[in-house]
Image (cartoon, rainbow, N blue to C red; front, side, top):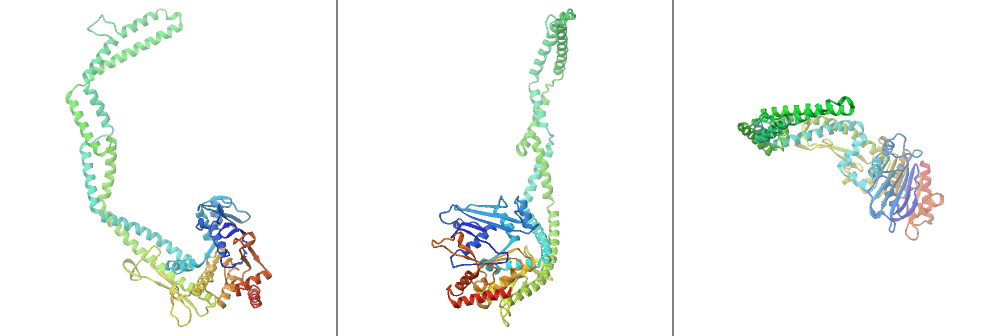
Length: 572
């Protein structure tokens, strides 16, 4: 991993061991920036305050080995990322203005994608994670995660039934609480539908009536114009001397007929004049029929106007035209059917709600039984791990309980409160020594004990739900002496199954690491490329001596450091 312009780090390269890597250094040297860098690569929140003063942006680049065919690889390839010999190249840039960009396998990707991959690749634990373990919801999640399919399957079914019950309950409440509003809406729809049904409009009727009203209102003018046009085309019987268009065209055709045989062009013109004569006779005939059929009945005009007024009354209320009025009526009839079926719907929803509550109770009972069975195994495994962490007499257990609630679901003859994850309240209890009553870890565990419980939980998870990398940020806080040695030993064993990275102040923990990295500042207060180095041989003894006694050259501290390293090598 390469880090540039992040906090006190100017430019540094961090090489992590496949096994157990310990990151050490003086307080304020920048060890936390190593953890922050990993957090950024894993989709953590970007903060402009992380950018080194005077730099335009901070950049973290990393190469992550990923198992072939793992969910992380599949998700990355779906996003267009390319693998480089079994590794993913990841980079994150944070500008001084707070903007953030992420790249994965050579492709620009949303930062959220890095966070998705992190769930399958790395388990991060620090002081905040310990505090998170104090929350009951996190303790239940930890138990469910350990139980695996035994809890996941009934929990999935329960979640579906719970979601449906919420929807049914909400609809039932909406219908019953808004009964008056729905009744008023039904009355308005019913009135409108009755008003439309009384008029019985037809699609397109308003257009037809408008055209008829226009024709009837100008009947005399239309008849007179048709008569004049007919006379111009076919002649006026009362004026036999008059000249009309038909007679003139016929004369033109006769004149040309006598000579058409002498010129094909003239013959064609003669035929066209003949066509004009036929067309004139047809139009003249239609004009005569139009005049005869034209109805100038004022009673019919009055009936048309009355019908148009009735349609206009509808279009003022229900639509721009008759087509929209009919569409409104169709929609309203469907809605009225819904509203009038409220009583029937209430009955259906009530029956479905009761059935879902019964189903939910059965699933909650199955879920509780699965959790209880897993809790015994989980507690026994964590207790065994605590014995390896210098807490040989500590006992861990789970308190799984339900709360009475008259509005809840029935489980084993009791009506109890329920939520999206079941009816159980899960609490992790710790009895640190014989005779001590089990108490919630939030009240019964010191800082050092809580650190060891957290580590024990993670070790148990490693055997059932492993991830490739574990990152512990001063998870050994509040621990010392023999307990610190045992934590170092347990982290070393965990590192045989996965990569383990630990930021620590404890030499007892660092001594068990396969690789120890020292983060140190230069004289100007920055961490440069050479400021993160792998410690070997004499350099590692000197750093462990400093961590033990604050003095690198103390003979007593050196002897103790060498003893710690020898103990760690013997344990490996």
